[in-house]
Amino acid sequence: MSMSDSDSSSSSSYAADHKSFKQITRERLLHEMLRSAKTGDSKSTWKVLIMDKLTVKIMSHSCKMADITDEGVSLVEDIYKRRQPLPTMDAIYFIQPTKENVIMFLSDMSGKTPLYRKAFVFFSSTIPRELVMEIKKDTRVLPRLGALKEMNLEYFPIDSQIAPVIHEWTYDAMCHDLLNMEGNKYVHEVPGKDGVPPERKEVLLEDHDPVWLELRHAHIADASEKLHEKMTNFISRNKAAQIQHGSRDSKEMSTRDLQKMVQALPQYSEQIDKLSLHVEIAGKINSIIRETGLRELGQLEQDIVFGDAGMKDVIKFFTTKEDATRENKLRLIMILAAVYPEKFEGEKGRNLMRVARLTDDDITAVNNLRMLGGQPDTKKSLTAAFGGLKFDIHKKKCAARKDRAGEDETWQLSRFYPIIEELIEKLAKNDLSKEDYPCLNDPSPTFHGSPFAGAANPVPPPQSMRSRRTPTWARPRGSDDGYSSDSVLRHASSDFKKMGRRIFVFIVGGATRSELRACHKLTGKLKREIILGSSSLDDPAQFITKLKMMTTHELSLDDIQI
Image (cartoon, rainbow, N blue to C red; front, top):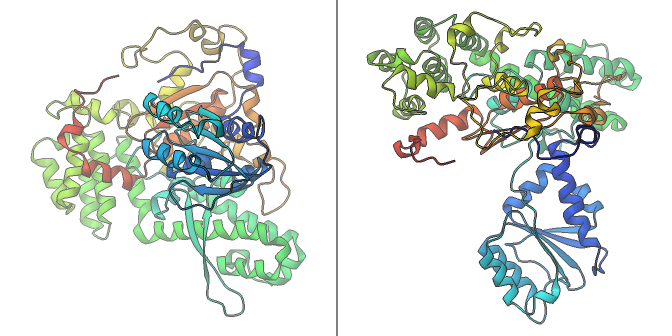
């Protein structure tokens, strides 16, 4: 866990120039990479951008196609696909430093007739010395080389975030948990005109969508209510919409009604399109919640985590709710095993898994969960293992308090918070246990100085972020219409201008959506940007699949070196 940003400038200048991690990544890609190819001896106005599978993802996480075009790129190509020669144009290569990529690049630019006039090569990470020598050896390529640089950008800046298996009830988490989305991609049907069959359309739920930006961290009930308000306000403020809508109650308006309104009122198509998309998504989520009895299950999950329910309650649930899905039963057992590890010693745990009718693979996942962090032969090692899974291991202390001090009323289904939230708050106060979280290197002087410990130039204490369920920076400010979050995108990064030093947190093995949400919330609360990194961002199904596939060797921590 890194304590602070490496910037050694004064805290005042640091705060003035503070930008979000995603903004910095975007500027490096656009300015340091694409724009730099415009200078020097580059003579072509438009350029070709060539990438591989990984670098395409890196670019798409930070930049839109319009951003790339604005920097003079007219064509984006895959390095592994056959490409048309464009000898009058320069090419920008943004590729991984692999032997295969270097061979492809040299093949493009060597010989008498290269594919492009000049090549500006940017590697996503450090290139091995032997590959540099391979490039230097090709005397035909060197004169055609405009740049050769390492960008060190092999990460995805996800600016958007449950312990691995508990149901998280925010709009964002519900989308990823219940709708089987691929990344942030959602597929929905748009009705065709004049008898044309419906068209399947892919949309990305990302921060360019102001409705998503506003609602993603809201409880699903809050999000549904807000969408209803937006729809009602839109109809009440637009006479044409009132005529199209007729006298029906706004509650009766379906997604299809909204899509028909788009066709009838093309001048409002963008606003209604976004609104109808989210009305459809929220409607699907609420239907799944009703059909699967998820509210009752979610209440039991929360009660277990807070010490208000135990094995008897789980057995009762299994015997009375036989229609519960096997995955939900498995997740409930995993939560129980994390909070009450001693209940799974001996026959008790095996009997419970038989009652739940778990498969052999499911049982393997539960056993592997118990193995994480040490051999399950003592209660102490089990507790340490499950503590690492972001459940509050101090169960009795946790059960004694339903809400965190200084925080407002929360939904009963959202009482659980990931332990990372507490750890970051302690880190910000320089109150984190040195025994449990030792420094690998001696802390820098700034760690004890004003930027971190707050000894000088103290920042006024921020107001509680729970006073509004949606984070301050993700709420509309002064919007007076019924369909857009008009100022959310304008103000999304404005609060970064007065920030303290960053806090970097890296979770080995996968982070979860509630942890990402907690970092968003604490960024506003602590007035310091919290950057969460991990080897992956896992939804519950992905986490369980990983557990099922783990081997005894992978579960051993003896060989890990830091």
